[in-house]
Image (cartoon, rainbow, N blue to C red; front, top):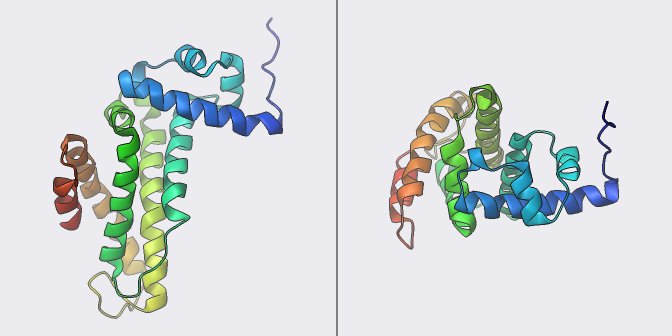
Length: 198
């Protein structure tokens, strides 16, 4: 019987995670994400497979970290604009997210194309998709709740009015992601137009 996998020290966990994220982005940029293995990530990063798996026991967890880092880079510097209503603020945040995704465009397209490839992972992938989008929705909702504005800029009577529309918005946003993956324009004009219609 093999020895149990040792956990990396807390001092090394973040270093390993950062190296894995960088290597995963590099691997996904040139190869379908669903085909990228731990061994490939280990080869690129110079880490041991055992050390990678101690931090990310499942490959979907690597993607969760990549998305979390992406969202944090946008949301930690975001601030409310009282001149904008809910829809306008959400548009600005999500366009900033698309701009950030352009940095690793090929990798993010590879991630998108991999969704649904492994049926057992579909629930986790859907959870990742909805939880990521919800961060932006919820932040804008809080901003506009404080300002007393609603989606169309009118008085907001119940904040729940935002929430009941989230699932519909999320379903439509999938198409915006598809359009972004095909949008080669420097200003992402087609992506902006599609997002503005939501």
